[in-house]
Image (cartoon, rainbow, N blue to C red; front, side, top):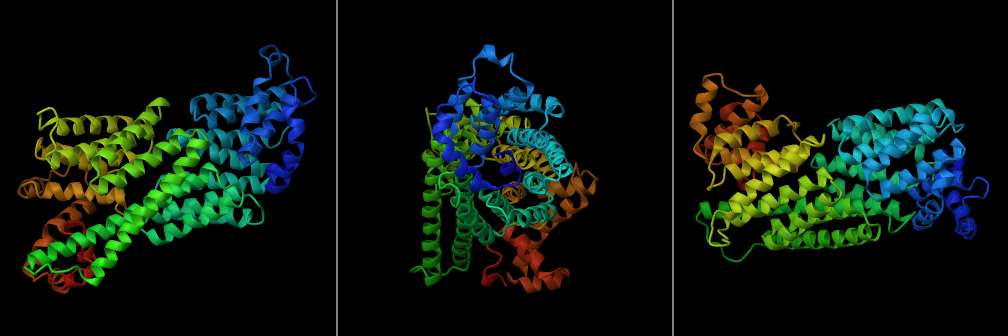
Length: 535
């Protein structure tokens, strides 16, 4: 069983365990090597052996009195099993205590893979908590320990986790390289869960870079790969949710284009008339994307609930709530936001709590802007939005997730710049803080889009003269020269575009810049810059 784990002979290992299932059910702690066996069963349950309930029962059979007299090799494997079950219960701190103990004594146990496996599990726990620096440190240690023992296949598995953390730190190209290296090694195995993880990670990277169609292809490939091992695996559920999120982003992009077309026609004083063939096709695709996203989220939620996974279920609620928010269904969005926060609060999961509060802030801002009143107080929603925004920032600061913090700061700023608070100066400070966390690397990304939406509101809040005055006095805050240049371009280019008859080619010639940059600025500032009429 141990050799099948380290060499990733998954099908053979699971088949062997299935043959032994009747004997496993009769296993008792006093049987020779029975307790030591539990750590290996835990590793196989993680790899797809459907026996989590049996494992829990086996661990519960070990009496407290026996634990004090167990050989170290058996006691360590018991702690591995207990650590794994804590991970399944999504109790990361409890799991860390088990695996850190295993690490502390691993050199005293004659198991060449134990140190690598324990390091890997510690890294997974820190990643789940949002402690990316610690996760990367232990992931690298696990990989090095595996390579030192000649366990190249196991090292490839750990490299997948390392690549995910590197991706979270914004090093996309390096992350892709590591994923491809691992895929080359693991393609000779039947470790469909890790192979699915690789394809899912590639989907996340493509999504971050705005390559949405490719992201959908990667997630579809991940889902099919997971299904080769388990049609109800939690990782499959995560890929379904990720696919739904991309479908939402594509729907948002289509919606922006449709809004830009309506605005253009109104500004041109064109008669609206019946929708064009293109508009009908866009509307049909928009409706199809939303329906597919909701269907994927429903399937994902069902799997997560079957495994009692609060984090996965909470993420589904946050994505579905955002989808409802986009469609103006604020009550449904509010219910999902509250559930996402509740699930996070139950486990003290700061990442999920922050996501829930951000969505609640979005909903309350939406209700305020629509003039929805409660308790005869028109300001109730604005005040609630500010409360949720501040809590979202506080929760995000408990993690090392920079993008999460950037979103929380952005929506805090969105709240402060609304008509009730109208505090553009405070909102601008939050925007500046968020900008230091999000790299403007040219990729079309929803976090960057939200930040640009805040900056656009600030530009329209009667603050252009104030900004130019500050710049003339050398007051630039924490902004880089590139950020200042981008802000100045966002002020200047739309004005020149209007004066040049809304012709991108004329703007590019007039300012001696590339048409591509003009389109990008206009897309962020006025919307729909890739539409034909803007060329």
